[in-house]
Length: 240
Image (cartoon, rainbow, N blue to C red):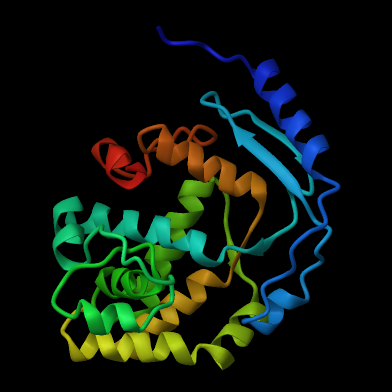
């Protein structure tokens, strides 16, 4: 039996979770990218977007933070939209590597085998797949526009974060060129790396991510704009 959950139930759950977790002070900021180390660590917010487009929030849900690896999901989805899920599976794969997300060793150990677009190597390869090949500006416009459509509002690069990432992304540069060496990247390695760096540097709010998640879960129709963003049959593929 399908249980219907009304907005009040969701609101109560969001508020309870916020109260329960807001005083948690353990952990520390990531510092492998200098910009991230300086983000105010006290910020905390929860947002949930309902099928009718209403967004329930608690806390700091309007602060734009670096999207980082969350950006891997929409780019993989855009590649599916352009080529079909089968081509993404063939060119990149969907299997976990069993190694860290930024592993170079995973490429060396599985040079002839597919990976997943949810680790750095696969995400850089996904960026390389985005059409039109060889046109950095047009590819970036496609990625930026697609993420904005998912989120229901425009997103922008945090310039300081982009500069910080670009100055320290030596590991990802190695990944891009190793992919080139093994024929697993589908556009210029430096172009693809820069696209990946830029998409990771986008600033998004918790509200925007909630809307994007609802769009993906809802079969490709944004619940706030009512526009179709991607084909309905891709929803179970990207959420699997």
